[in-house]
Amino acid sequence: MRRDQYIKLGAYPGLLDAGRDTLKIKWGKCMKILRRILAKANQLEEAVVIAVFVVMLAASFAQVLNRNLFQAPIGWFEELARYAQVYVALLAMELGLRDGSQMSLTAVTDRLPGQSKELVSILAKIIVAGVSILFFVKSIQLFQGMVASEQRSPGLKIYMYIPYFALPLSCGIASAVQSCTVIQKIVDLCAGHHKKEVSH
Image 1 (tube, one colour):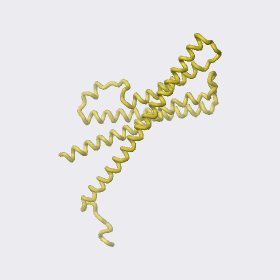
Image 2: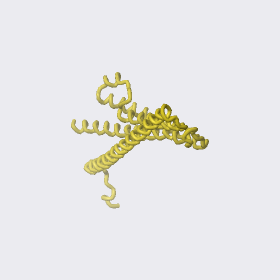
Image 3: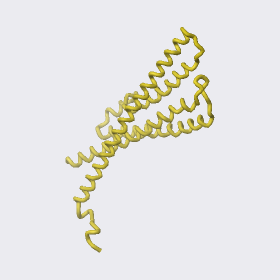
Image 4: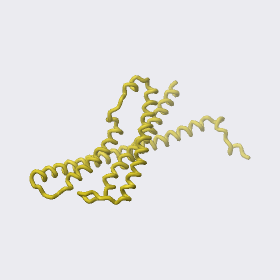
């Protein structure tokens, strides 16, 4: 058996360094692609929230005008505004959870040192991701039940699973985004720890 067919990596540390550098480059590219996808998804979600919000305002305004001026027998304005408000509330909740604008208690974490603060932040994100996944699974079950029931709304005469789809949509996006955020935070923490070791 030829010797060059079996290389002991311990005797060739340069190979280990080259392999580690290659892995870092590939992982860095994956993280860049992931951040780009999240940024595009964020822009799309914001556009959807704005569009649904406009629909909600238009339906509410039309309903007020119709009630006070025209008094036409149109009863689905209020229903449309209500369903649009559900979508806006759930999707905006996910956006606020993503960019950190949701209300949170930071009295303890603000007093922690750098690395401990990052670890607590990662733990909090893991809990949020776990809760989001749990809600997503339960919302899928609820959505399937509404699809099976074939119930229709009284005003718009649409299937009720359309308004209920807001639950699995928002919870699914939150699950994916929070899981990716956890991965990104762990990678950033490991990268920062590795840089400190190299500098020392």
